[in-house]
Image 1 (cartoon, one colour):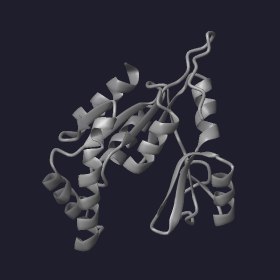
Image 2: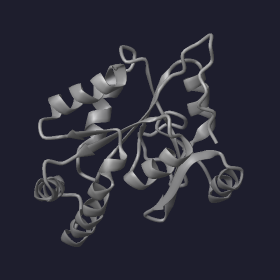
Image 3: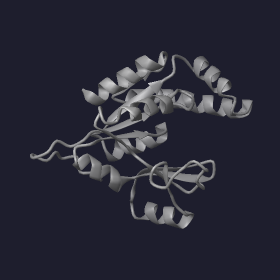
Image 4: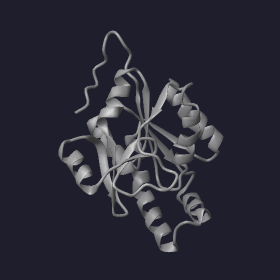
Length: 194
């Protein structure tokens, strides 16, 4: 369990969790926020994964690359804020680096799926939870089709999951509709600095 007590001598950083359905643009929103990380006193959490690194990915920058055994040991030892299996690979948010940054007064941004965010809410109720919402499910479907990276069957699975995810949005502190990207980024930045 994360200690949420503030120290008298130093202000703790804020844990900012941004999530929403696949295709909603949360990665794009967070990518723009990352470019302004110094201005926002922001550090981006690095996830651990069991999948192999892609050519342009670097250890400790894009992911912490782990074997199945290493990842399982981390799970067994309670090292994650949250973790999940997706497409036969494990992904998780290591807790220790997040806590260290928060203790130093640095805000930490987690960009994770809704299931992961719900797990973090249980473990760290003092975080700031932002749900990035599409203007509508139909617009989300159009964005997924427009990406051209998934089959029609995969798109329908993602849309069905998105319908469930949209029902979870009232559990978040803030709901930001990503209709106009610049406005969505501005709103999330304002939440971070508030």
